[in-house]
Amino acid sequence: MATDRAATLAALRARLARIQGGGRTAADAVPVAKPVDAALPGGQGLPRGSSHEVAAAEGDSGSTFGFASMLAARACAGPAPQTTFWIEPEPSIWPAGALRFGMRPETLVVVAASGVDSLWAAEEALRCPAVGAACLVYPKPLDLPASRRLQLAAEAGGGIGLVLVRPEALAQPSAARTRWRIASAPGTGVRDYDLGQAAWRLELVKAVGGRQGEWTLVWDEDEQALLPQDVQPTAVQPVRAFL
Image 1 (cartoon, helix red, strand yellow):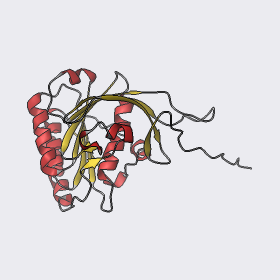
Image 2 (spheres, helix red, strand yellow):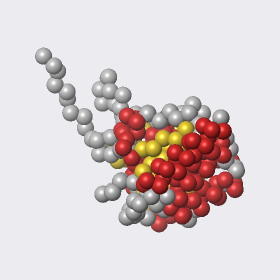
Image 3 (cartoon, rainbow, N blue to C red):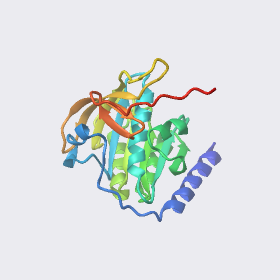
Image 4 (cartoon, rainbow, N blue to C red):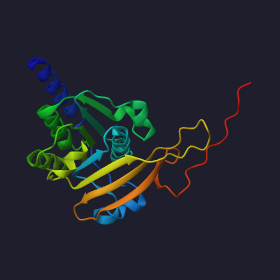
């Protein structure tokens, strides 16, 4: 077991060393959606160089995975795409699903780690300037010292830390700059057999330098945009039947 752990940590160090040279040219904020951005510090989006916590309703982890994938994809986008680290005890991220929210599979690094090892991996990833986002799935309550270390690591590297936590974790003190609660909302299928666009009820529980708020938003996959539910998504064109 100790040998496996050492090998995992060595592999992570080697991977970070290979991508260390990537520069950071992105803006200071990651846009979420226009009505949401207005509530965030600076009014431009999710601040870079900071850590953020996201919790979903019990049994609705798909919402947090979709939201985190979208934010990570936007944090890493640009002429010189940056890397996303996804850290989870038993990785369950589905690359095809992440692609739906704009994430490029070639920029995704998945790390299987739990407990203190997962925290260490997230901190090391966040300190690397070439890492645009580090997503940490953390099933236990995150204590204040650990959240501070993640925040300091994000400040050092300039990326965003996304910590996917259980709902009860939001009751604990945290150094995260924003904290979110998310749940699925009815989709927008336009045909009987269409599963529709992903839709979320998003609550900004905490925003240092911003304000709280709630929104119902729909993900328009064609436009790669998160829109208010009352805005019509891109129309789906009829599919010509095969003869």
